[in-house]
Image (cartoon, rainbow, N blue to C red; front, top):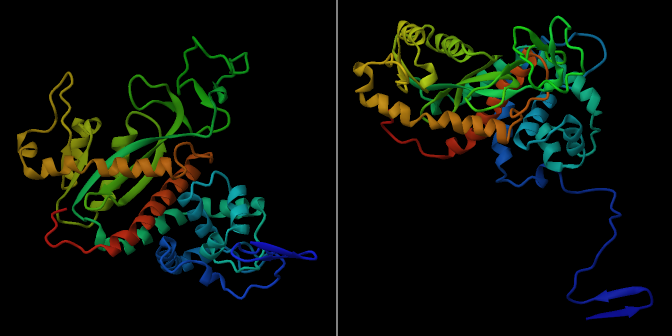
Length: 372
């Protein structure tokens, strides 16, 4: 029921629509974020990691000159970009401007000015050319140490599509006489051709029946208890990169340890040199046997053990991580060029994956007598 008195509308049950004319707010930004919001625990963990990285971040900046965006702001903003699948830094900066949750997570106040997206990208590049991603990743894993197995792992690689088109894949000797749009019937390989926009990208396909794309290979070592990523790196895409990268990660993981560990992998790792080298590193290979046109490099001494079956049953954990990195994270097709920058983004995204999962693991009781 409503009555009109002059130009004023009197409303009984229906709410009154008011003009947004307030200039001041008496509710703080901290109060705007619900106490049980999932990002609260993530922010707390992130702050702990960033405090431990403060000396390394200080070393990246000069003592004098024009002040830049604090690296803590940049890293928290990049985490939001990964968590919420924001496709560009222009949109990221725009959301930080009007999204109170984003402002709170980054560390900005209600009235703080937000940076120009070009300035943000320029400051981000300073971090991309450093080892900040690996240090950030290592500190996140240090916080997650009690939730990670230190004996049983799985290794695998995934194709990361490069930010380069097929048109850019041109002959190295400039023998192409067209614009690169029509390459049907032409024989093109990484030996004779290279991308003009991203020279580090390689033409590669990971499985039969698929088209070749300009790509990188991302590699991850996942622990078998909760599926947290224990090591990560990016290499050029070729047929040997997966096994070579796996050996590098395993060697670093086993360095200084006397206790034997296990590593699970798919049949692509069932190669004589890989199995022999892994055993020399005091690691037991739990690899899916490859009997296609040959005999497997694993014998019954390994495959008959109960641990072999358990390791293979946990291999899905690494695929789950890769799925998150590509569906939610930015790794289906990276928007950075060059091996160093793509490696930075891959490792940082793996750290974001672990960071997002940690609060849930901390809230769960730890079962006694875990084998993994």
